[in-house]
Image (cartoon, rainbow, N blue to C red; front, side, top):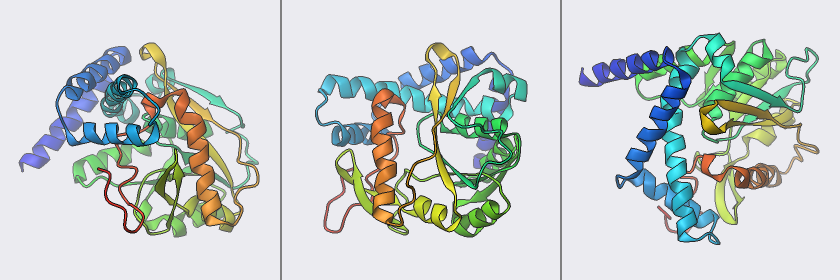
Length: 294
């Protein structure tokens, strides 16, 4: 009972934030992130471990700076779900600018996989793509374990035309969507375990990486458009950055295709290192015989 009450209070708070000025909500989330970073926690240790593995050349001072900024961004992104799920379309449109190298409104767009990369703005970026497309878009997502938050998230994420499906149903549903000529949005740059994955380098560290993107693109004859939701400075909102389709992809080699995604991330993360999702245990699954790094 307490869990249900707490969930309803949390959702109610997000709905309240949605009617407040965006700058105020963003600053609150930023301050809350700063405060929580001062408290020792397992997630704080995960951030430092990831940064130490990926950027061994950085000084301790730089890692500390980026870790603190990232924690603030991560907590702020949760608070800003208020605008993404509950604010009016007009208010949402005002906080997102679109920078796309392709015409998202092209009615003749070929079968397309929209590859969302896990920067802290991925939620805003994903919803901005739904909004910009102006038509139904298939979207895979990881369900919440809490039923109240799951219902709120599904309603919020689908309000601009997204048709949602759990990752557990991915291959069958994605291929159906592609046959129906719907763009399909998915994320693949997280550690989901060894099923349908391979180990390829991520900043020189073996990382358990999904091979599903290349295989789905091959079977569905689809192009792959990576996109990033970037947080703009000075609490101005987000930029949805959509890149050109990857050339010569897929190759048919699962390992090479998985490496392509990680190599692309290695190009993009140094631009805004504090915004990549370092609170995730990216190296949780280790190659056989290797000890845990967390």
